[in-house]
Every structure is written in C-alpha cells, then in structure tokens.
Image 1 (cartoon, one colour):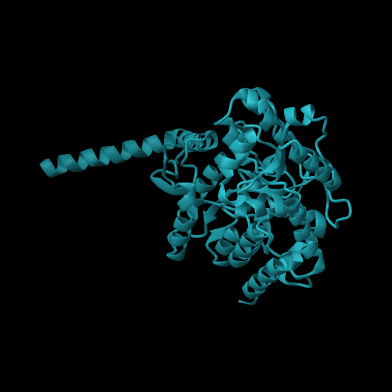
Image 2 (tube, one colour):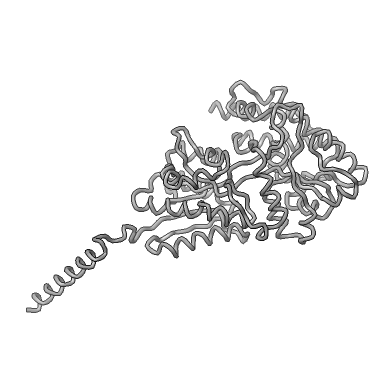
Length: 435
C-alpha cells in the first residue's frame, strides 16, 4: 500500500511539472546551470578598472542563470599567467588580449574563435568602431576575433600653457619650430621636454615611433618588419634615428633622463620644470590622480610636430586599438552563447561610453559628457578623432628586436651611434623572421 501511495505521488508531481511546462510554452531556460569563466587585468583601483568590474557584476545580476567565474589579475603578471595557461590548453572561456603579436599567437595556435556572428547580429555597433578598430583583430580567414574596449594612444605632445605664454612662444607644428622652441627654453634654463626612460620602452613608444613614421612612412616599416624589401640598416631609417639624436644633441631632455621612470618624469613636467612632454594617454589619468585641478587646467595637448621632408604622414599619433576580449575555441553550445553575451555587454555602445567617461580612450564613435571628465582628457578625446594612427614599434617587432631598439635609444641618449643601433635591430628582426 505504501509503495502504491509513493508511486501515485510521484506520478502526480510529474503531471504537475508537465502542466507547468505547457503553460510556459513548453520550454525551460536553456542556460540553467551554465558557468563561464573570464580573466582580465582590470584589478586596480583606477576608474576604468572599477567600471569594467562593475559591468561584469551587472551582467551577473541581469543573468542569474549564468554563473561567471571571474579572475582579475594585476597588469604586471597578466601576460605571463595567460601564456602559461595557454601552453597547458587551459584558457578561460573569455580573456583579455592585446593587439599585435600577443593575439597572433592565440590565432596561430587555434586557441580562439571569431566573434563575427556577434558583429553581424548588431550591425550598428559593428559600424561605430573607429577606422582600424576591428581590422586589428581580423585574420586571414576574414573573421573578426575581438572588439576593442580601449585605445592605445602613446605619443601625445603635452605642453605647459603658462610657460609658452610667458615666453611668447607658440606650440610647435613643424620640426624646425620644435628646434627653435627648444633653443628658447634652454636659454631660459627650462627643460624643453621631460622624459623618464629608466624603463627603456618609453623613448621608443612615446617619441621615436612617431618621429620614425613621419620619416619612413608606415608601409616601409611594415616591410622592414617582414624583411620584405626593407632593412633597418636602410638610409631612411638611419635618418629617422638621426632625428631622435637631434633632440638629444639639442638638450631636449633633463639630466639623468635614463635614470628616472615615467611617473617621475610626469611629475617633473607637472611641477613646471619642463615645457613639454611626449607621452601616452595613460598620463592623463595618472596626473588626474596626483595633481591639482589648477595644474591640469594649465596642460594642453597636441601631436608630435610634422617633418615636412619625410615620407610619412603628419598629424598622426602612434597607437590604435587597445585590448579586447577573446573567445576560447573550446567554448561551445550554451556556454558559447553566454560568453558572447558577456563580450557584447563589455564592449557595446553603452559600455564604450562608460569606459570613455572613466577617462579612458576608446576606438569607438561615442559622445561623452564633458562634465564627467577633465578638460585635458576631453581635449585629448576630441584630438584622437581628428588624427590618423601610426604603429607602435614594439607591438610589431619581435621581442628581441623590440629590446634592441629600446636599449639602442638609451645608448643614443648617452652618445651612442645610430648606425650601430640600426645594425643590432636589423640582426634581431632578421633572426626572428628566419626562425
């Protein structure tokens, strides 16, 4: 009798469940119990990091049926952690990447899959990225593998408005004007350009890349990268190094520039000890967190002066698309659908606006509220929409070649020879291409 009773109860429960299913259209949420993982490097206390972490938290609230396993890894250790798990074929479903060789390796290893269906689903979003934004993540099969959530702008010319006004000088637009302005400031005992090249990437990323592109043009540089009809020992590249040496010989930089770091140089400039500084967009948020509003108001922003006799373009900034999120090639089915939803939530128009209003550059055509950002950021934000982009050297060079140009520029700042620097760079890149 007891067994019969239990059987009847179970049968009634099954019938009730079936009826509930019919009332709701005969379906249940296909994402029940889905878990996806995401790794990123927005672990800090800056406004952008908090904004992106907040987006992930909001996604979790709006999608309780999806469990998101999040790992926020500090910037300094992020590349190594991702490379380690990639080697073990244990990548998370979604992970932050950088343009250039970093993403190339994941693509070449068949570790990622395209997000093209997401872009096709949201054509207005797809078409609102700035020129070059999506193309940086396009590979040989014509598919797009990521959508940038940042812009890398590495060569703004910052200037002290008061020092220029007090000395009746105009912000230089050409190389000759720059040399004249530097002579005038040196005569006054004011350092023309602040730089902190203790970590030797600074001179290359912020200054030399912009100068070199104006001299050689981008096409020549990409040919030299591929070792296809161009060599870093070509006269045109020696000429580019010569322009950088002109800055050194004209006492552009403060004493001991190779012994101080980038943050120290930013403070040296902000304190009025230097009239100019060539640096990246990160400087804006760095100064916003460390100097007074009055000091920020006194800083203007422009581009590196043109070199009229050069082969390249004027009015460019080194940089382009920054980081974006990649989708693991092993993520399939409902997990893939959920992962694509999260990628979209972190890079759609609303997300791009929020990131921009956290004082971070984006490769997206979006309007921001000037009251939510500093005037310095707003002016830089408008400027990047009026310029073209030139390559950042170390995003395209091999690791060994990047080290060669970085240390080579340090050596030039200490009196080194341009041809010797060019020879080492060429040897390093040629070896990398031959391997």
